[in-house]
Length: 152
Image 1: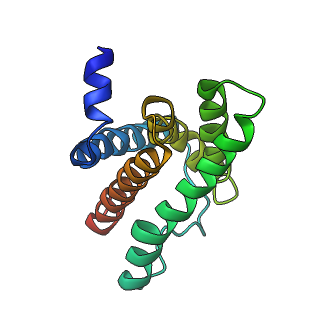
Image 2: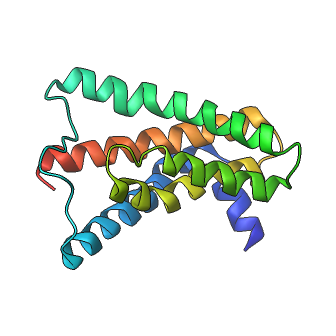
């Protein structure tokens, strides 16, 4: 099993596939919220209405910025905590950073951020971990944006 995980997280070609899993988790959480009768506030908007701005911000710039912040949190916390613990802390803080938009968004982002953080534990080189995490996050956001356009 460890070999399979290292192979999947070891090649950037698997980033779109891993992102499908994170997307499915997010969609599943959304359906669970809907089943429980939990909905975002009425004034909650997921898009700006300008597709170019949304794609540039959500699919390209946001994953880069959030991954660099995540890496900084992991590196800083790694001075006192183990690599696994600091990675989990980074994932939880990254998910919590989504709470100001809507608390449900933070809840649905926990597991995807744990997956985005996994390369920092699995990969030995930080550059490779940052590239894989950024690509996975970008594909995840891209899938989410396509789902919003489709009316989900």
